[in-house]
Length: 427
Image (tube, rainbow, N blue to C red; front, side):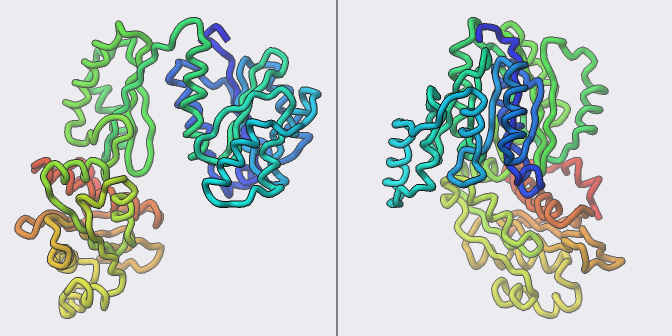
């Protein structure tokens, strides 16, 4: 594996992927990590839990690959077939691997679980396989050669795959004659779509350097912009591009790498020694969940309130019953009272409050599905706005939660200008 121009293929296994019960995110993660070494994925194939089909596909792909990564099928159940299939293709037996068994014994011991026969299945590997450590889960990964192709087998659980890829990518880099020099700068943004961002770049930057590769990864709620270079000599050019993007997109850029809106808000709160509370109706606690996913969030987030029904808005947050009756739950007056009530009860310095119509039912001519009122800020400087996201329920909740966090981020940064998405989403 001396050349960076490797032919790499991915083989994904699992009936749950084929049926749509599980959405494949693992192949995207593998491709991104390989991209750090300037290695592209030539082809990927997904096959259900069928010994014959898996064997045929594995053998064919190994013939045309320098590296084949198999994802899935390493667990303890009867439909986990990767080890069995690889043994058949290579014509070797299956036997208990002492390193894999030791890993299982330690994994079970730390969780005070018995090492049963089902778990022991994960220690049965093709003869001659080399174990790849899994620092998170019970199933080790393993690798072996199939002809001239290196085959690496990884677990299908996303968190386990992510934990193992650091070692796999580092090993690939060591095996290359030339060290990988690809450097990827990832900028996280909110409130910009791919087409909008691309058009702004096309209109605003007419001398984009060829040595800086521009890429986008759209998601909900954030969009990632990637600037990739393959040599240190191109770093100054990338830095110039970054400066131009900052001028174009300004405060829509949240940060670098894996920055999130919630993470940035918590960082800003900690810098100021301030705290935040949430009062949520239509998002059902999603904003609080986004904040508390981050370790150390308790330093700046002490309480959140989910007040879905009107009587709870009144009883818990003190929203005026007459206002609820006259204005409705989805109104400026109610959402502002929710924010003030949450701050009064939690002692927080800032609040985010949201009340909206997530759908698919419940809309009216005046307040169609997708309408939301947001309030954000401090008790003495509380702002509010009515927006509309006419999208399916889960995406609506995601975007509303993100908008609430974004407006608090902007408040903490002292930004007075409205974000671009206000003009698009203002109801």
